[in-house]
Structures are given as C-alpha cells and as structure tokens.
Amino acid sequence: MNDCLEQKQNFGLSVCVRIPQMPRCMITTPANFKFTAAQMASEATFKAAVEAAIAAGAAERIYLWPLFSGFENASEAAVYEENAYGSMFVRNGRYRFRFFFTQDLCLHTAMYSHRATSGRAFVLDIDDQMLGTKDSEGNFYGFTISLVNPENLVISDGSVSTKSPVYVVLANPIELNKNGRLVPASFINTIERLTSVTLADGPAPDSATKVQVNVNNECDSTPLEGLAKEDFKLLTTAGAPQTITTITYVGNGLYELNGTGLVSGTVDLVAAADLSVKNYESSGPKTVTIT
Image: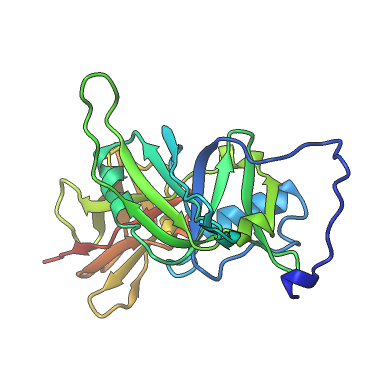
C-alpha cells in the first residue's frame, strides 16, 4: 500500500504499556528463519521451537548469544535536508548498537566466527521480552542484519573489566517502526546455549573390544557426563557403522565403548538434536586406530 494513502491508526491509551526495555541478549538467525503463529501459541510450544532451532543443522541453526555486560546505542539520527524553502525528510537513521560481553577468551574467538553482513537478529530485554518484526501472516522474524562485527578485545585498564564488543547494524528501521512486535519470552532464562565438545584419546590404546574416548567442553575442558551408547557413532574407515554393545563411564569425561571385532575408523557423537544430553555438539570425530 502507498504510504500516502495508508489509513491512520488511532491513539487510544493502552491499559498495559509494553515497550522494549534495556537489551540484555540477542539471538541471530538465518535470513529466512521465522517463528510461526502456531509455534508461539503457548509458552511451551514457543520454548520447544527455540530449543529445536538452537540444536538444528548448521544451515538452519539459530544462536543464543551470552548475556550482555554492557550496551551502547550508536544509532544514526534521521536525515533531513534543510534549505531556504523548508525542511525535507530524506530517511530515518539506521539502528546501530554495540553490545559488550565479559566472557572467556575462547568465547571471544567463537564470537569472531559470527561476522556477518546478512541474516537476522532478535533482541531480548531485561523484562524477558523478545523484540522482532512480523509479517502479514503473523510470522515472527528477527530484524534484518546489515552488519555484525565482533570488534577487538578491549583489555582492562584496572578500572573496568576486559570486554568483547560486538557492533550490530540493522538494515531497515521500518521493520521496527512499522512492523515491530514484542513477545513475552521468560522461558529464555531456562534454555541452554549450544556448547562444543571435543573427543580425544583415552589413556589406553584402542582394541578390537574396547575404544576409549574423552569428551570434554572445548573451551574449559570440563567433562561431559551422562552420555548413553546411542549418543556415539562408531564407524569403520569406509564409513560403515560398528556395533557398540555397552558403554562404561569411567569418570572425568572418559567413556569406554565396548564391542566385538572392532576395527580402525572414527568415533563421534550423533547430531546435537539427537543427543540424550541436550545442547552439546561434537567439534569433530576422533580417529580410532586398532592394530
């Protein structure tokens, strides 16, 4: 519809005033990602949709970032042309934000891998509200991203903490000004972020009846406990599956995979969405060498 002909809306005061508050977190998504009206019908279905998208395959996955430790609104002012004839509107300024994180150096480098000039972003505020944009069918999208740039680590000078700044520019202010939507999302506090784990050799050599594998958090080496035999996939060098009859958890992240007639190949975890321990993902398989 032509903006000049658009029907003006009324200004009746709302009993419940809901507006965005101070940002505290964000979710980045692929450009075509959306939550449907059915997925947002209840808190339970909305939470399930978020959890499923966090553990989805890499092409469809969304990322729940760590909580902010600082926020700078660097948004551009509206642009006008001023001359002797009057004032003319040119365009609204772009929304530009700088979010700060006080996290481990490992997470700083992980953020650096999220540099982007496309995709979308939801913003979550201190009142547990998720801010995004809606379409005519009631689908809920993040805002279109023009730029996500993790900046250089700002090292403490003794008066403030070391921080990782991330500069985010939204592509189209109309998505918020005309079609902004604010959705309650208190469940976000109970959702675990996807964590990478590494698989490494155990202390004993691999054999035809037993393969040892250490499973630990990639960033801080804390052990991942509670895995079941169905969480592992043991393959030959040709990619054929091998049968794991039982597993034994030795402790401190060390698992023993037991079988018969095992041969050289690889061992890895199944996809994040299929793990019995949720929101973990292998960073790659471990080589199994049986002589």
